[in-house]
Length: 286
Image (cartoon, rainbow, N blue to C red; front, top):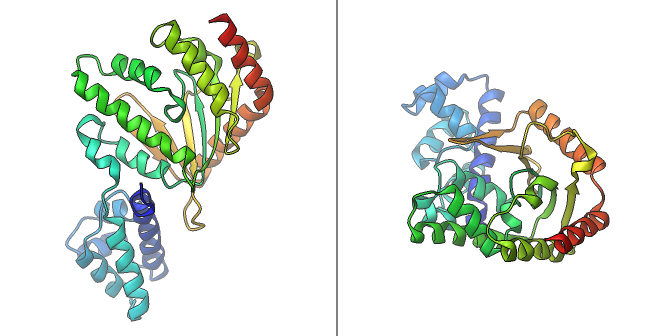
């Protein structure tokens, strides 16, 4: 996966945030900006959030409206728009992906720090092929064997990022429920537990287990992921997956609440070494 592919989503967000700052600094409303490119106010909103691709002509017209006449600045922003429209490698899996998921894969592939809490099953970046197959087959009832294999292949492709040259720091808290809920047979679960023990020893992975014995905890609202990016212009994004859609939260007050919950989960869970011992204990029992 090239940096250009992994960064296309982030480039859209970067360009969108820069266009928003330019518009606001000139005191121009979204409605007026939309009128200048023959589009609605909501289209400008989606552009500024990095949720849609950019037409060169639209960016040129907006820069003119915002009074950006310096050729170097225009060229820089227009080249960013061009790069932002590059389709990531994951788009070849769009036939087996829910519509909201490619955006997440793009963000995940561009993050410098991924913090996640999982309660239903082991996080996708840490699943073995056999476990992933069991999870996908359960979740895609009625799907063809070929479609299931493609979804599993995508999951394994995502995992390459964790061991790449530009690998992110990955801090994950797994609820004990995710480790005890069986997907696949006994051999699959044993293989998954051993894989977690192995991968937890990577320098960029911090894996903790929230044990049943702790009782109620800060993850009561369910699974979530907080993505942080190397670009200082970009705010952290919280990803919440639902049954038929997903939410991407980037308002500072929302992100802060989830970051607090994540820190509380990390503080309340046994540390990485103790969590590895918990995993070894579960492996012996399985």
